[in-house]
Structure formats: C-alpha cells, structure tokens
Image 1: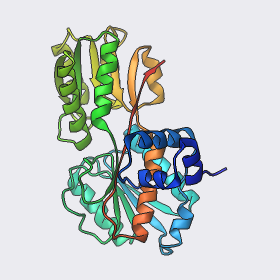
Image 2: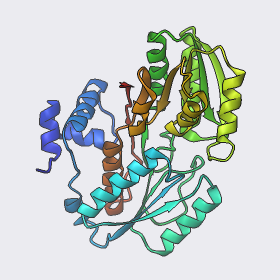
Image 3: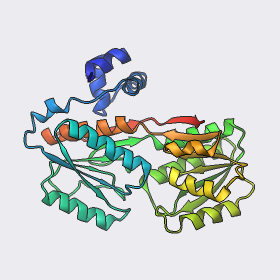
Length: 315
C-alpha cells in the first residue's frame, strides 16, 4: 500500500509540515530532521507525484544525465528514478556524459530539443550559474549544496570521516586513500574530509589518485599499493576502485578495506570490509519529487537536500 506524508509524519512522531520542510530542503531542527530521515528509510515512502502533476499537465517526459552508467550508484539511481517515473506515467530519457563536460552539454541540448519537461543532472564539473535553459533542473550527487538549482546529495564529509573512524576502531593506524585523479565534486569532498579527519584523529594518511575511467585504473592502483606497502587499511573512493584493489591483492588481504557505495559482490571480499551505503531510493524519490514541483512552480528559491550515508560492515 502506498505511503504518504501522513505515514512518514506518524512514523517520525512529527507534524506533516515538518516532513514537508525536510523533503523541501528547508530549515528544520537537526533532531527532527534525523527522525524524518529515519522514518523515510524505515517505510516505503513514495511521493504522490500524480497529484503534483495535475499542476503540470503537459509533463510527459523528463531527462536524466549521469557521468557513468557503469558506476553502481548511478545505475541504481537511474533505475529508481525510472521505476518511480513509470509508475506515475512519466517517461525518462537517459544519457551518459562519460565524465566529459562537452558531451554533457550536447546531451543537455538534445534533451532541450526533445522538449523534456524537466532534467535530473549529475554534472561533471561544478555549476556556479543557472543552466542556460528554460527546462527545470534538479542536480544530484555531484553538487556542493551552493548551486543555483535544487539539489540532492550525500553528506560526503561526514561519510568519509565515519569510514576513517570505523577503520580506526578496527585498529587501523595507517590508511591509504585512493581518490580521483581528475577534479570531481563529490570525490574532492570525500578526499578533503578523509585527510582532515584522519590527521585530527592521529592516523597516518597516504594519498594516491586514480583515473575515473577504466583506462589506467589498474596500473594506478598497483602503483599506489606497491608504493605504500606498510599501510594497514585502504579506503577507496568507490567500489570500482576497490575492485581493482581486491584484484591486485588477490588472496593477500592483510589490510582492512573500505569504500563508498555498496554492491552485492563486496561480500566476496571477506569480513571486516567497511562501506558507506547511500540511500539511493530515497535520494531518487526526493530528486524526482523536487523536479515535478519545480516543473509546476519555477519561482521558489533553490532547495538543497542532504542525506546521511550509513557505514556498515559487509559480512
């Protein structure tokens, strides 16, 4: 049975107005926000987009552009958006920018020419000015929270710090962080938080930078591991990089491992693997709901919704 704001409010023990403010990214006391976010995770909440679409009757198709469809997070996000949009009668046009700003611009123009009613965009580079288009836009993942568009993102700094804390609790004293070679909005935030928190916590920090694409990734990981043989933990920016780490180490897994973004195959790597799981469905639901609202009313100020990641041990 579908759930709505009333169900979320009841589960969280707050008013419906408070739930609406959280979903809209407005100011809410941290204790109340935490209760609402927990309720969203614990029940199968789906925004009532059908009612909202009555205010935007011409909405028939939306576009979504991601930097890498082979990345498990983006694949899961697109699937969640497509499933929800399908259930509400919206079609989705999916594009992959392949981490290329020029390709992203071409896709945006294509979707504009196709007259999509709204766009979900994970930008390759930071967006400081409004997207030059009359199409409503909601940004996700690759955002700082200061953009002139609605956005949905993970609290990358808190998640990176939590991973370091978990590794330290497991006994790690020297951690090798493997982050993006190219500048990346989310990856940079994770790297900065990792280095800052680890230094504050008295952990020996090593850094190596790995290409986003598959070309050169394996060699870069091998070089990083061979150059840092004394570390007792490795933290990877995503599970693609961790896969290269696992392949390189083979059966010689004497170090603790950690990464962002869960994947089913991570269970094959054995115990003591720490991972930050993003609430993908909740993030997708929030992004699509915000986009439909923006399609109906493009005058309100930009809203920025930040979700907490969950650090867990893969067993």
